[in-house]
Length: 155
Image 1 (cartoon, rainbow, N blue to C red):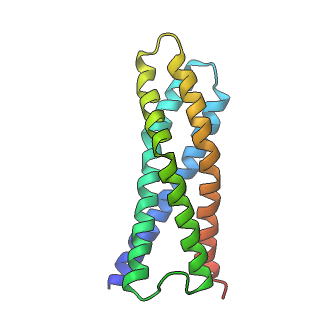
Image 2 (image 1 turned 30 degrees about the vertical axis):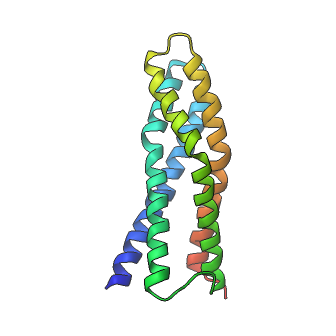
Image 3 (image 1 turned 45 degrees about the vertical axis):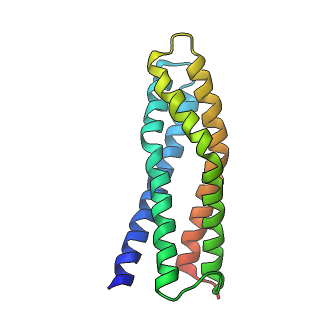
């Protein structure tokens, strides 16, 4: 029963992580296409509103995986497929932790967009989102590899 509950939480969080993450990438692409138009600010605000869901889902995936490894006897780095998934998640969590100041700056810049008359907040948003995006794509690739390993499970 515990295994099923934890696995369900883990899978739902993975779906949210990847689903909202793909949406986030789509919105980022639209932001770049709308550069210099009034739509750009609205898209940046949408991006900021939903990007936190990805971070929360990532933490839930990691927590559920950690609990399953501890309580269900899977251990850490004992099986190839699971060890690779655990290493990927560890790298993603380290990257997220290093990005916390950038995330905070991005949210402050996005909040400043509504009162920005000179466009400085918009320029800061553009630069900050570009920095974040350079990390987001490898994280999403890592997530997809982890999903493939969960399904394929090489020995």
